[in-house]
Image 1 (cartoon, rainbow, N blue to C red):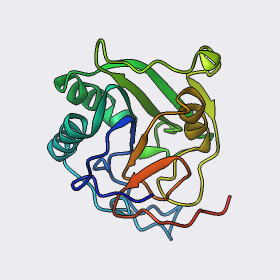
Image 2 (tube, one colour):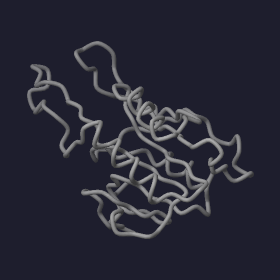
Image 3 (cartoon, rainbow, N blue to C red):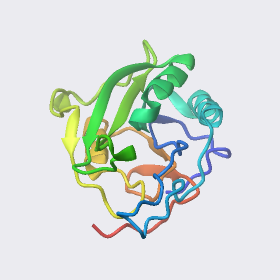
Image 4 (tube, helix red, strand yellow):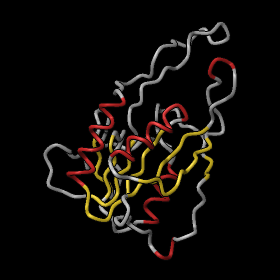
Length: 194
């Protein structure tokens, strides 16, 4: 269900967020004449804007026991952890999505992973379902989809299995999914083809 985070009384014990970090896509290269270069194909936010939004959401929309799962890239790993630490959160785990392939920025190394940070406040962590404890690895592999910024299905499977009865909210969502509320300027009601 699409929700308006600024006009809801609902509280969530799981928040999954994919902030629109400011990043480039590399310049137009001779080897890729059809690439446009420049930035990502969606509006981005400054680090201060991202921090303010997450601090506000965490303060207003979470239950006492809750977890925040935040997507970040290598470029913003330390900033993401630092901004959430300022809001009182600690990192419980860093999931690593092996994307199998990725861009070779400046023709150096291929950035073929993203991080999914599991964040909690001391004394307020929501523990996973006992039957799922120890089931999942912090590293999983799934090919990148054609839709920009689409996150791996495995990440949703992990969260759904560990927290089956939790009220879940996805920030900066691109589609709705069963059992989750969604918020974002690109969220659609219909599902993507797999």
